[in-house]
Image (tube, rainbow, N blue to C red; front, side, top):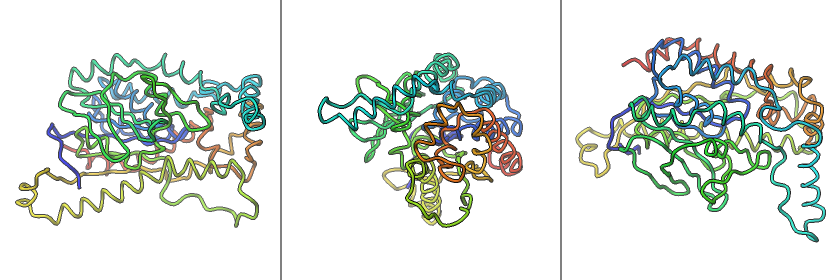
Length: 382
């Protein structure tokens, strides 16, 4: 059951991972700003992993102006180009590919460890460093506009998920099986670590340890927000409950792109849906317990109000319409992994950092959320 932290209750926002699908969240957030028409960020607790950590951090850094924050995110996601996330020039891609070839072919003779990732994400580091004012996060926490911001990453040393959080003194670090929390002054490195998709993006070093995408081990994405004090949570996912149907039964051995797409779905999508189901069951259980018994429990328990926003259209059905805009060297890499006109869609929908594709995702998030404006207003009404 949900434990009640000893602090003021708060609205929480949970943003899951999803690579380029983070554009859907940006569209949903702009719609929320237009629906609510409030000056300050209406969520004092934010929790993100992978691409969701980028969006959450940008909101926390601009908590004094929710409208401006969502417009800035809109500009960030709709103006994306692949080369602003990872190097797409032929020499860079050839270098990383060569390192993997050496590791796999000659590693037994000359040692391994040269191939760190399939993509060089130094442009993403520069993008986050220049666009994200991490010092503003501390100011907004000090002024009470933000109660807590948590970004989750996976430790390659322990295999645990670590939530790095910055917030009010009333928030205490927590530790559960395979997950822990560490108070930190959040910087670009924490955001990069949380969004470092295994194999595709390089691991990030923080305080002498190496971290990768937080969604790898974060089986309970709602938990960080709850631990930081949220009792009413809006969660924005990046995949519909019912994915796009396949044309026909697969008659070939799965390609690397298809296998990677299934893996990324498991990392970015399945954990949120499982946690939402768990939360519903716990809420039902708590509702059956008399208030008098709840009050006597050694650890106070409570229910969580939850609203989940999801795409009405599967993002994989949008990505192939923009494939021709990808740099030639990048298309060559994707095709080498097995992507084609009728396969590998899932992988491309996560790594398709192109403005045409991300704009369509953004518009989908915006339209889906506006369509639920009455529900959103009722849910967040004081």
